[in-house]
Image 1 (cartoon, rainbow, N blue to C red):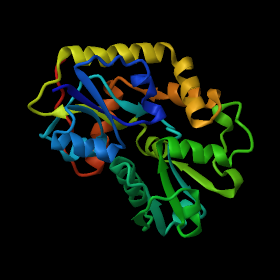
Image 2 (cartoon, rainbow, N blue to C red):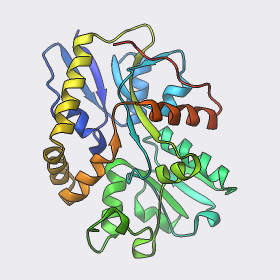
Image 3 (cartoon, one colour):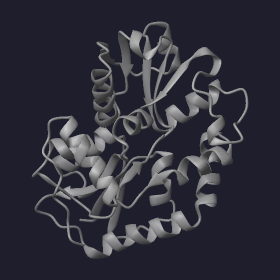
Length: 271
């Protein structure tokens, strides 16, 4: 049986997988984060990118690679709450079913701000604003939705509008940064606790990451073409990420664990 790896098909993971060479003895399964989480626990994949909140909830059942993450310090640009009322006036918000981490982060931020909003799982885009005060979108859908509201591609990150076309856009990772001054970790590579990943598979992933980050322009152009978005926007988006689970990222993950009532993550493989 091949060794099975689970991956989400999002632009923010493209630097990790664009140059991934998959040998015959390895199989890749693609899914959204909630699917990947379930597949790993059920044994349908052996190693997967999993959402950080799921990892914290499954403490003891999973173990993470020590040097892989999908994290940001500040804005992430693809975990956005689009809303028609101000943050303080939110009462009914549609949330994605793709990622428990983003939903839990939103719930925490609303609670910290004293906002009593009802979160309703609904697979809607910006059209959902006709029935809800806000819509939480993640990944490629969030990028595309934001781009659709822009009249032009901003020349600088400091020129990004937060209310394009009259719609509020709240970047959840930036709100987390303002609360904590720490990175936010959205995902990690993990296996089931008793099943250490083969060193050659880990080396495949590290080699792919080195090539992806070393040729980020090429990765951004490929993702821009796939999504129909400007390459410059995708390149800035991708170079904003932290992919190595460094000390600040681990502090951010521990802070998220504390914020959500979980003990800190300490289960990492030595590979």
